[in-house]
Image (cartoon, rainbow, N blue to C red):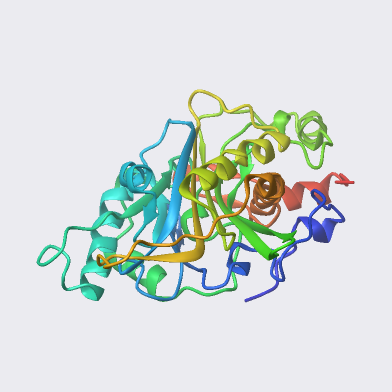
Length: 354
């Protein structure tokens, strides 16, 4: 895989906290990400899969929570997460009209690994998230097939490709090409050093709103690209947060709500037609599926520690969005619809991000 030029390679440092080694969601040990990219003419779409850990997630569930910033979305699986506070499957990202296909494939994946599902135990809660890629992709053609989902699930890695890949292939962000982005932060506390990582599927915003570390880069580009017609913001963003911080479901919910601070710093105003969905999980404790004879013991941080995690969530979200923009490549898709790449415009118009 060719190294990608990320936002920090442009001299932009977001926030105060240090990043993890990869500056990725996979800095949380055990988390891996896989993509399948479909890019050919009217077909500009794909699948991204996130494995929360390398064991059996159904048998060893994780503390999890979800938060809806704006609910214009079709995400599956959040009801049970919010009721039980646990995640029991990988998370699959794709386009809006492929959530059924993705759910079928993820169910097959879980049944293969857990013969007791639907026999000696209950069923399973597949978690599927989506954004609408219809501008660049012929979403009605429903190009995604079960084999694509399976391939993404089977071929995950700690090395995460960003931009125009996987579920991000046909996505737009701030009127430019968007897609997959990731970032992480380390949190040094008295009882240990922890990591929080974020992966986004970005598909929202209008160019004039875009800000990079407080600089109104979108306004500058908009003035120079007079022929660009700005679309209404009808997109969405999916934000997946992983951490090894020991937290309760309630604490995790408080943390992932702070994604909005990072999102707003990039310029988002959370418009009515844009769905902003956050799902978070902690790998600190694995919760057994099978009943035990003793009470479970879950370590959690003191509430006075949580502000550091709030900061980490905002910073990682902000940088993940910017990485999704700056790593994306120009795409010509359905009916000749086109979206330029942020990095190409920066070079063409000699725009500095600092």
